[in-house]
Length: 298
Image (cartoon, rainbow, N blue to C red; front, side, top):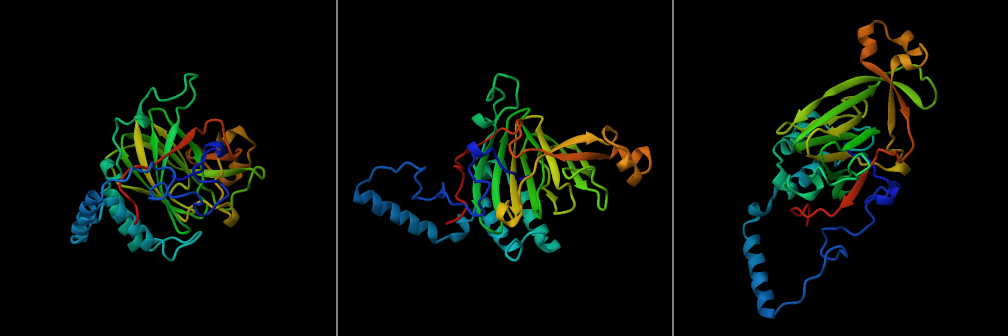
């Protein structure tokens, strides 16, 4: 599902390809309060504990670390429009299918998911984005949605995206472009409905591709829910991977140009015009927060 947040609330700037801000999980990060120094005896004890843990490296491989290592392998030779092999897709999907809410340090009782954790004017409640990792090849993040939270319809240019619903129920509506269909205008294009239904956890990870699988989608939280997202490669404006938001219109709302391409009422019901919106739509309400779950990398 990955997409960009409103600029004034950004954790990742829209114009950057790499994370320039300090790693929130780094020991040197200004986001983490430094603890007061303890006695040398305590330090020696802790060093001994670290040595003891390192004697059994298998115990250190958490689900999050396993996900990170798998992403490095799957997207190592990737790039815009490059789809990993079927074997690698299945390898990453197997990891995600087994991911649980507690594996990333989340619980449904956290403030992010409360129904009253939102504005009083009836607008969409804020969705919280937790950033885990980003590099040139891929990014990992989690979207925390309270009930009725909405991520507007948006695209994923040249990307392969894995989304794992960790808990809750979410409605998904997605589209793919109709190949060789005439455009109504430079910002309005014909699309075919790919999915219009709800998912309830536990369920397998969903995958979308550069030109298939529902590359444009909208997520609506029916109940509180969390979605773990892996994008390969991530958004990057200088490389042409800009997140675009869309409005959808029934086929009959405009001229009959689409009717020249589509024949039959059944086909028409499964299609819509998608019109580009501004970069910061009013119904986009996403804020960033510090990820405090298990460490992603060393």
